Length: 600
Image 1 (cartoon, rainbow, N blue to C red):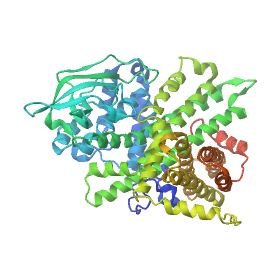
Image 2: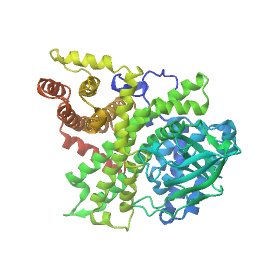
Image 3: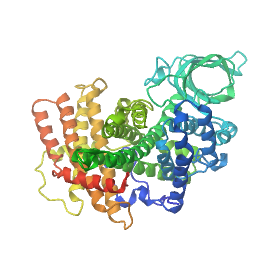
Image 4: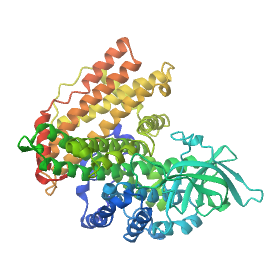
């Protein structure tokens, strides 16, 4: 099985901004060996034969069926793919788990059921549970004998999770914690046997607990009537003097934030993967309809406006997938290195996900917003039929909307990505100061007239310059903040601009590295010219977006000579040559239309 752990780990979380990567040292899905492809094929078959035929029943709220499918997935090893063999899991490498997750993307509401159970429902116990807790619960969760749910959000605390009011007080005999409070928007609540619950011990110490369904005083609200993902159970959970055995305390008192936030790192990453998997399926439906729908005597797939939509969907998803496997492999290598140093399976996974929390936050935004584009254009390509409930198009549109909200809203994830980067820089974990200072000195010199060399010289230079544009912009803002002239906490618009610049750069570099690696491979899904076309289109458009975000950020905090100099610097760092994007897009679209599906 493909498991490239012999590569030395050199790029830490967030360091993509200041270091370059070798295309031969990243992982791309085209690297998978036969064994890994067989495992993904098994997951694909499960979706095709078990979940897809039951879509209507699942969407109608047949939760018994959803649970039966969860148990069937467990029998195939899918539920425990990421869990250690010691508790009944498969212990698969992170890259293979990513491929399995991609396969489950098209399952709509059921993917939410699966992800909540296997992710935020199980990982807190793996990461923070005692050995007794792991032995008691993990084997039954992996077998789907127990179903898990995660209780964090409250009516008064959404993004501000630490403001939770649910309270836990130790009983007089010291044997129980007494829980009182309310949780809302709880996925899997209607059929869960086990709840990961966060409460304030003594009213001020945010702490995690494992709470069993049959606990006296635990009750549920009615199923929520939602815009989308109607086939997933979502209820309020109420706690009225619920006795939780002291041994069901999860982690340390007052350290519940570590459980909540670390579980969300993986959740954000997997949400991106699920969005990419769903998008590939939906793009296929767009292409098929465009080939079948005749207008003005021709299939609408023949028209440039439709080819634009098809190619743009493919390019956005291919870029997101490139970044997710790059990150997946980073986490996999980090896990292997940590285990080699003596870390447990759970600790290695926990620390690897924490290391790449910046990338996970960016990927959550990338995947969810790419899917939003795909479902919107899918409706548009279908026209009136897309607005009808006769097919699945309207459901895809509704279901996709939640992805920009849960696992931390996209606004929160943008803010987090920049905040984590700056905090790591201040703590010395990432050397941002040196590269930022080098950019400032470069701005004072004459620009180099050397022309980029090599088949991807212009693209490599463009990505390097994107990074310089970010360092220049963020560095200047951070300097003004340290001098007391700017308060970035109150200037979220600037942070959002920088986050979008980071996201475009991360996706652009990931797409470039994958394209360069594919150029050296004999066997690949598409001709190299298709990959080259996608790369050039993405960089062409990213250049415009980075320019716009950079100008907005700089104009928001700089003025006079400083603004003038920095705008000149931004122009210097966004000079990727214009491309004939209409022809390049048509090349991508024509290949996909010929294949009749997402072709990569």
